[in-house]
Length: 394
Image (cartoon, rainbow, N blue to C red; front, side, top):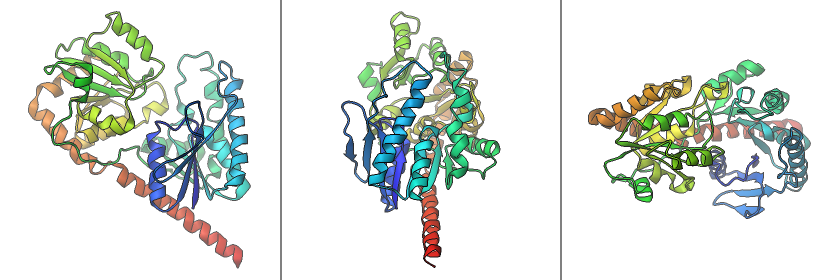
């Protein structure tokens, strides 16, 4: 089948959609990822097994009003429709609610199947403290509300979000395709990438956060927790709106032993992750989407063989406790975080048990297993489509 996967980003660092595209292409489908263009990127780009087409939006630079996002979505939908006329697909796969209007319109225009991939709980997102934060919750989920029941299949990233989507829209529980890494062989000798690049002394242990540098990730509490641990430093890998303000606080001396080097390439991430001693997933309960989240960083720590300290939220705590890969804390309490870090790093037998459990759990929670669910879902869509064509011929 010809499959278009739609994203409203540059598609330069979207690990989930990359894995989906690669897996579907390996299963024999012709796959194109449709993304947004920006200066320095190719409009059309060939990956190993699939194609990327980027749409140029004249309105993309618009900022600061409620109208701007709406206009951008309308422009994307219009330009995608024109492009889709040239190369219609059998399936339109909408990643997040903001691509649903374009995917729904194309699926109806060409009689194609529609797949909706909910990466977040759209009705329960946190919009921070922006001046539009009171308005966005009222309109953000409207594409989902309008089009989700038209989807031939719905998938999402955690059981909690799947059940909540089913409850809200009175639809069957969506399929869960976890956002897990591809399984790879860990190096026999533990990497030392972070320590070498940042000049961290050998006697200092490394507590790692990787991902977007946003509010609601427990980062401030993580950095405060480190201040009471003289033999431990905090490293936060990633970029985001809070990065520069955090760097300023480090430079001013507010936080000691805190490193903020920025983003690292996805294909090199494991070497950085595996060179840490413990990984943190301190999602705060600021919204229902966070409450039911199961971030990919948790699985990345697992695959890197480092113990995990995570929030006492349903999906995160269940994954950590059931697999015995670390400890659970209140992300709003720095003293709990520091105590947990110290407990894990100060007891060699406990530490080694968590490491062994991480390696064992990675054999179950990996993209090879999750991609089978995705490929199986598409096989059902293909069989359904073939049956429909046979009935039409009769």
